[in-house]
Every structure is written in C-alpha cells, then in structure tokens.
Length: 136
Image (cartoon, rainbow, N blue to C red; front, side):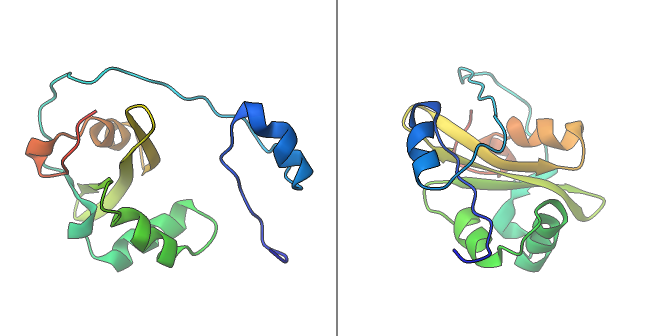
C-alpha cells in the first residue's frame, strides 16, 4: 500500500494472523448489542442520507475523518442492503450513520454526530421517519 495507512476492523481470535501480515494493534473497541422492538417517536430531523446533497455529506465526512474517501462514501451510503440516515439541524448536516446487516442482526457504523442529541436520534431512527427500512 505504499505510504498509505491501512486500518483493519478485526477480531481478537485472528490477531496473530494480522501481525503476520504486518498489522499492529492500534486500539480496542467495544461492541454492544440490544434487542429490537422498542418503539420510538419519529424525529423529522432524521432523513435519508441520499436526500442530502452528496457534496454536503462528503464535506461533513471530511470534518470527522482524516482522508478524502468520497468514492468509498458514495458506495457505502448507497449500498442496497444498508440504510444511511442523516441528522439535519438548522439546515445543515449534524451527523450521519449507516446500519447494515450482520451475521447476527445488524451493525451500526459509521456513526458520526456533533453531539449526543444527534447521535441518539440517529440510533433510534425508525421507518416512519422516512429514514430507512430497518429499525433496531
């Protein structure tokens, strides 16, 4: 990969294999799980991310991610089996998140938000808000 920095979202059981391939542990993360079915009121500030001009989404992403990843981002938020939502406040994007199918249930990520209010609204977005087709 030349001088590029490459990140890997791996699993603990494979850490020895990752090291053999030249990767080094950068940090640990924690995954949480919850059971769906909880009903939340729709938040009209949560909208399908595709309804926001892509240049605005890309600019927001650049404010929270060090590299330009416009090509990746466009594919990621338009993936047919995922739901991407944005949180709009005062006419501007204040966060976005993507939910996608996993082996068991769904994964959320990335999720970037300006504050806890925006993050909470993105986490509990439900289909009636027009935000997508999958509810946690």
